[in-house]
Image (cartoon, rainbow, N blue to C red):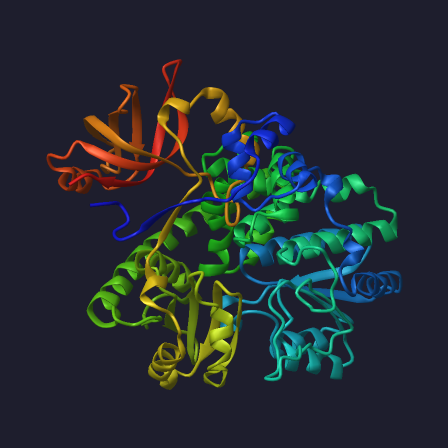
Length: 574
């Protein structure tokens, strides 16, 4: 029996002179091996990975159309033209809008913002937002975290005489012959364009906006320090939008987390407080799983403008009230997610467990949690998953994928079924008529080339490291590898043949297990497993030997510090 069913444990076997790397950078060979496993190769890259500074962020002028976009904005600001930012309702869109709004205001622009309502408007800029802007005599629209696929909508804006600037990071739509299909905007700043020579295309919408503000501040003579003080919002967007924490993103997030402790945003500070966190010790985990979901909850269940109001708030009591409201909305979102996940898993078990691509229709589910539910089902079954719900007048869907399935590309194969769609290799969103749901399911499965091997999860182990190697110094050194997240996962170690001396279930919900473990050499060390304790005891039975995938940790209790391991995966000896 094991924690992850039929999962295969795979040991990384990448080669390098780990002793030489360790000596050169004053780290252990264990840490050197982990760095190599993350595909960080060469002296310059290792140095940047371990000690990268803000000075090593890429030049924003390398982004295609950046200079022309900022020049257009300079002219509009100096001639007093009205500018409207059109953002998006998720955390990346909220942070992007915040950054552009603050940046344009600082440069003296007549600027306001519009964030689409998830249910009423759907994703991105739409015709009604454009016509409303025209009626209100807006001269220039600047999008953030959206717009690259809005070909028709931006065409309408141009026909109405408006200037349109796009800042985005999503995949560029293509014609059937592979040629890029770009909207008729006055400037498009998106690193995913083929003709863009920016060194790292994996930045989010918030980072694109942050880079634009950098160039804007250069143009208007605003001190660089003011731009650097907004770094935390680029970092929050990067983590919240689950971007790969590699290359430039890693530097942005590492330094952005430090910047949060000094944030000028009263609202962000209060949100961290109501979440029960210490603002001086935030990790990428806290952003991704505690603070970020609260910001996202406003766009899911009410309006994303609430989250933006919080970040812009200057008055402490108001900030506390909005922060509390966002926390409550997130609790409501969690309940809805749990109920939807249970129903989705039941459907898969009863109807779709033989499908390669899971398409689950939950008509009564709130469309805002469809993506989260899709992610939970994907984790449980390790298959690409789409969750569909009834929206206003049509079906709305969100998808989450596995490495072997390029979701956006596969959706392009059935694009005539959609009213609207977009996404990445690993995630996507769309709308369609309800009559096409069954055809959508059938055709995705017919065109899928997935094999049974693709559905077996792989647990990648960095180092097979005996517990005897664990020291406080090593645990401290591993912090050099932070921030952890997508693309820079927390290291995983493995140890075989541990004897279980005793077991204790902890927590009021019985969701933690403390094991007293002993190695074959007689070293005793505690292990913590965060899982259903009662189920683990039942599974354990009379067995007293196990293999584990773990991460080393220090347990601090009553002034005492003891080494322990946090068990991520296990296999019991039968």
